[in-house]
Each structure stands twice: as C-alpha cells, then as structure tokens.
Length: 505
Image (cartoon, rainbow, N blue to C red; front, side, top):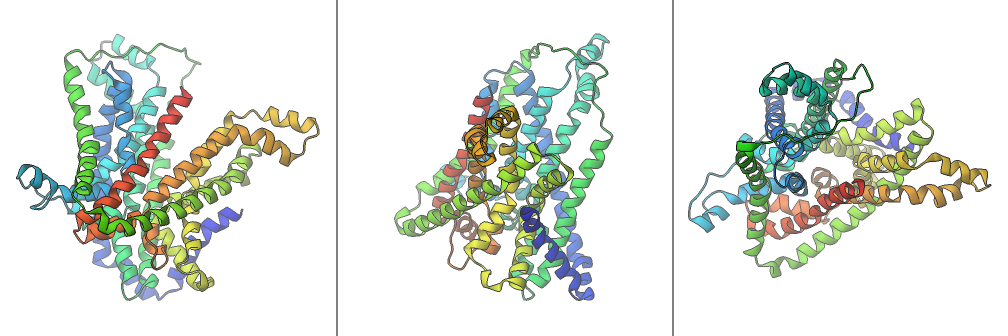
C-alpha cells in the first residue's frame, strides 16, 4: 500500500496542480498550434518506429527460430545486443559518424550526411527498440501452434498465403505487446529527440520546464504525455480483446522441424549480418573511435566523478527497488486477491508513466509539501526506485512461481516461525530472482537520462548527463569517454539475459 501511494502521489498531485491552475493558461498550452505539432510529431515517430521495428524484427525472429539458418543461436543472441546501447548513445554515435568532422570522414575522406530531425530520431530509436520487438516475436513463434500451418499446406496453400493467413494471426498478440512497449519508449524518450532536435512532447516538456513558467508551464504537457501513454495501453487491451487463439482440444506435442532455406540461406545471413552491422558494429566502432582519439588525462577527474556518482545512486536505487518489490511480489503470489493484484499492477504504473512526467510530478510534490527535499539525492533515488519497480517485481515473482509453497508449509508445520521460514526456506529459492532484479534496476539507472536531468542535485554528475551535455554542444570527442564507460557497464545487461537463458536451458 505504501508503494502504491508513493507511485500515485506525484502523478495525482500533478493532475491537481494542473486543474488548480488558471483554466485559460492551461487551455492555451494544450490547444495551441505548437501542441498539435508536437502531438503529430510524437504520433508520427511512434508509428514509424513501430513499423520499422516490426518489419525488421519479424523476418529476423522467423529466421532465428523456425529455419535452418547457420549459427542461429549466436545470431539470436547478437541481435539482442543493441539493448546494451542506450538510445542517447545511439544518437551520439549517429551524430558523430556524419558531417565534415565525423569519424566516417576521418577514416575514408568521404563526408556522409549527418542524420538529425525525424530521420535521425527514427533510425536511433528503431535500432534501440528493435530487440524488444524481436524478443516478443521470438516468444510468440516458440509457443504458436504449428499444426494449423501443416493443415494449410496440406490443403495446397502457398507458403506466402500460409504465413499471412495462419502464422500472422497467431503472432498478433506478440506484435501488439512489442508495439506497446516500443510506443511507450518512444513517447517517454528524451535523449534521442533532444539531440536530434526533433520536437516531441518530451522535448517540449523539458523546454517548458526550463522556461520562465517552470513546473506551471510544463504540467499540462506532462498530462498530455500521460494521456497519450494511457491511450496506447487501452488501445492494446481493446485490440487483444477480440483475439481468440485457444484450441478446441488439448493438442499434441510436435517435433518442430526447421524450415530449409536452400537458396535463401546466403541472402538470409546477409540480412541478419546487415542488422548486426547497423545496430551493433557501427555504434560500438564510432564510440570506441571517438574515445581513442580523446586525451583522457584532461577529463579523468570528471569521468571518475561521474562514474562514482552513477554507481552510488544506481546501487542505492537497485537495493531500494528490490526491497520494495519483495513484499509486493510475495503478497501477489502467496496471497492473491483483488487488493494484492491491484497493488502489483500499480507498481507497473510508474514504469508506464513517461519519466519526464513522473519527474515533474515528483518535483511539484517536493516543492509543495517538503521543499527541503528539493533537488536532493534522496528524491533522485526515490524516483529511480519507483520508476523501475516493475523491473524488480518481475524476476522475484518468477522465482516465487518456481518455489514450491509446500516447503514453506512443511517448515511452519515443524514449528518454525514465519520470519525464520522466509529467511531459511523462501529466500534461498528466490535469491537468483533477486540478483536479477538488482542487476536490471542497477543497469537501468546507469543509463537513465530524463529523471536525472530534472531531479539531480546541483553539482551532481552522471555518465548519461555528461554524454547528453557534450553531445548537445557538438563536442563529440569530449563525450566519447563517458559513452565508452556506459557502453561497457550496459553490456552487463546482455550478460544477465545470457545467464538467464543458459540457466533456463
């Protein structure tokens, strides 16, 4: 209950603050032509990124799960690697690659156009969000019913018709789930659109907050961002309501035979290789090339400070989020009820809320209720732990699903108290899930930019803030050391995925 109040308080206070403001001023902000342009830009970018990620992830998922593509497990793992590169690092890599002073010109003597605006935002966000769609589609392909595909082929349907009439309807829930996740990331993104100078709601919210009216001028924009995210969530629920994929019978386990690519084997490998080149090799090479040509000695003190500040808040937020998630997951799993399940769902509300809107709501609460905590490390860690609470709940809940409750019942029957039973029986069983929760939140905080930009105390430095500030001023060489450190630490996230996949095998 405390977590639910903590999540709802800044959001509710933001709504009250907006409703309590002058109606004319709020109306001017919401219904002005610039807001319509920002809405159009945000929707256009969402649709384009979802479209690009779907069109690229669908064949990649199909090739790495249903065909005889050589080294498909290696390719499947490598295609998830762009998750280790935050969106603003993708933008930094693209910006430092082109232009007369870019890395491409230094290496080849050829100046390629520098991506910016809508095109640059589309490319950077598509590369970063591609793995989310890929993971959802691979999950869908792993669980769909292949017998319908065999029946369609036996009736003489061509492969293309079988795919669109049989396979695609079964993948629709996975596409919707991936599309919702990608859309929420695009709406909440601040680093990419600000560096690419593309005006969406998140970019406009930060500009309004930095303007003369502060939180008062930014609050209506934050509400628009929250409303847009809510529309996407409701739309996914409505679209899923009509989907019925259950079988009439119990079905029968079948051995899945990989489809033979034959003459398409080499083009398929070239396609997957091109995805890896664009999404992984080019950004990593660009970042490392920029760091290689930088005099690190002059920046060592600043880099060290940013690393220490990032590590300190990341560790504190990871521990706080995991400790908050533990009772939520435990109550929802061991004592399921409307109340416990509702509280678990509320834990996901902070994650679904765009970070800039969440941070602004927290700022309004702090200034209005406890101004002494304004721009303190406590508020920053508070925001991190609540925003990424959903990432901590998931692994712990999965661990509780695999922990047999009869072991706890046997312990209690032997006279062991509830606290001792939890510490001696339950905790060892869910310890792997807790370690994953700690790792996920830690790495997410290391990469987080919007919450840090609005809530960081004066003089507080993080790696993400330095990357954004230097890149915004076109000082790409100065941003390279910070980008390299973030890249190295963020690569641990992929290590967590590999560890989980091997452990589950």
